[in-house]
Image 1 (cartoon, helix red, strand yellow):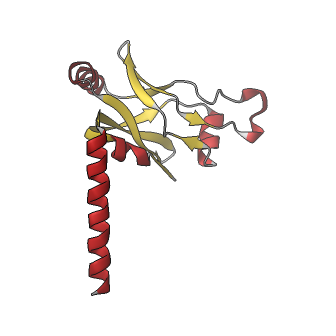
Image 2 (spheres, helix red, strand yellow):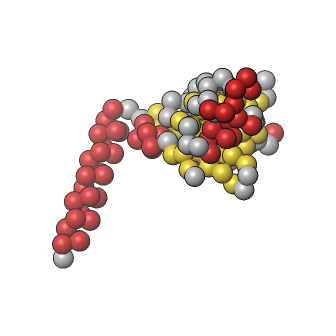
Length: 145
C-alpha cells in the first residue's frame, strides 16, 4: 500500500530525496494499514538535530479504545546524522522546504520518501499544465495511428 502526495510535483520543484523511517505507535500502524492516512498538507522541520513531520493525518483506529493516538501529532523521522545535517543546511541556506512525497511499507516498517523542494510560482504551474496537455495530445495522436 502506498500513500502518494500528488500535489507535491505540481507545487514544488524536487531538488533531493531521502528515505526516512517514522516513529509510530501500534494503533497508528494499524490505522495506516486500513488506509486512514493523509500526507497532503504535512511538512517536515529540523529541530535540535532531529527531523519531525508535522500535520500528518492518521485517523483513529476503531478498536483502539483508550490507547488511541492523536490524529495530527508531530512524528519523529529516523535519518542518519549526515543526512540530517545536509537537510538542515539546504533548508537554512537555500530557503527550501521539506515535503513528504510518498509513504509506503518496506517489510513491516513504514517509510516516508522526503523531498527537499523549492516552491513553484504561478507561471511555473501554468507551464506544467501546458506541458502536460501537450504530452496528452501527442499520446492521443500516436494512439490513433
